[in-house]
Length: 244
Image 1 (cartoon, helix red, strand yellow):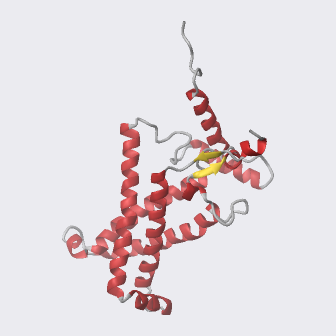
Image 2 (cartoon, one colour):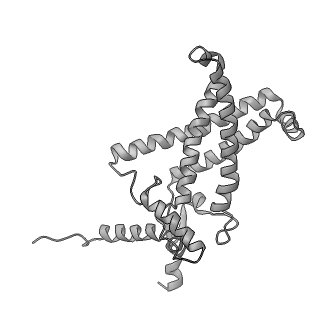
Image 3 (tube, one colour):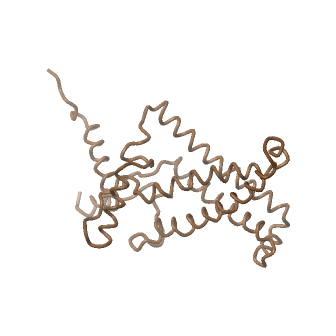
């Protein structure tokens, strides 16, 4: 195998389930943003035009709830997978290659800032960088906030029997501002950091294909590559200790 072929060796980064959930959430989130903001700002010319195109506010509200159901179904599927991963597979949720924050992420953040100002080397990132973990946790927590407040707004009569009426107004305010934050995060921060960086532009394909090449993973996620190499060596025949 030549050096060029070795550098282009493909590595699986995302499973079929992860890619499928990403696509569904991507479609659902975009649909929620379009329908939700069109309902909220229906007096604006662009929103009224979109409402007319869909067939009226009633149809738009139905679509908004449809996108909400499929999007939150993905959140529930992810939560169930985390439970299965921890309780059935007996795997760690806080290991070096997980999406959950660790002390190293704080060190990576500080090291990255020093690197930006020419005061140090680029940190050795694991499978997920500190900004990817922030992106994940922000959306994960935000989706649950949106889901709870959206459910209250979906059935205000029912929930007004269980809690004071001003909670409905509070849910409306939280739902709107959380939506604004989520859209800003996904359509600005996420798109720029995941797809529009010069070394990746115009699109990061691995989340859709599930694969990346060896050279790219060694450059961007050297900690993950070390883990892959270690796992491969330990799984190779004759790699374990032998007893006489």
